[in-house]
Length: 127
Image (cartoon, rainbow, N blue to C red; front, side):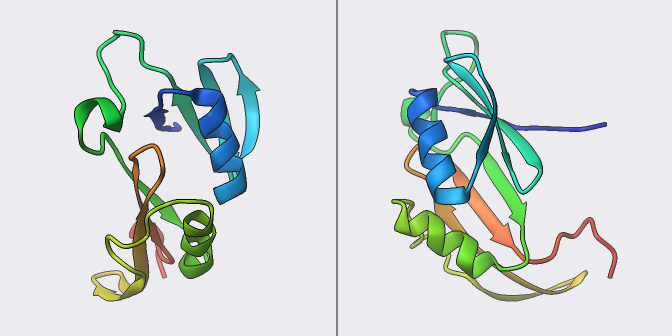
């Protein structure tokens, strides 16, 4: 089984360009208003809502999804996004003590209003 997320954006091509620059995303396919991307082997999708039961963060006035990313170096991942225009002021990278062990995590909000949590250890992995 695989589960993927589709981020609601008002301009999928512009968003795909930003994710490529900020996160190193690579395009899997492009249908214009719906685009498949991958970052480090993890697929996600961008879609332009069209009165079909979902909306962008801009449309709702709040994030519509929280994306969890686990990488070896969350500081570098977040810094790259911030340098490309993300807002990293919400919860800076810091160390946390978690039930699964020490965990370094921080957040950023991308220019499209999506909230990203970036950490170094997934609670789904065993030590």
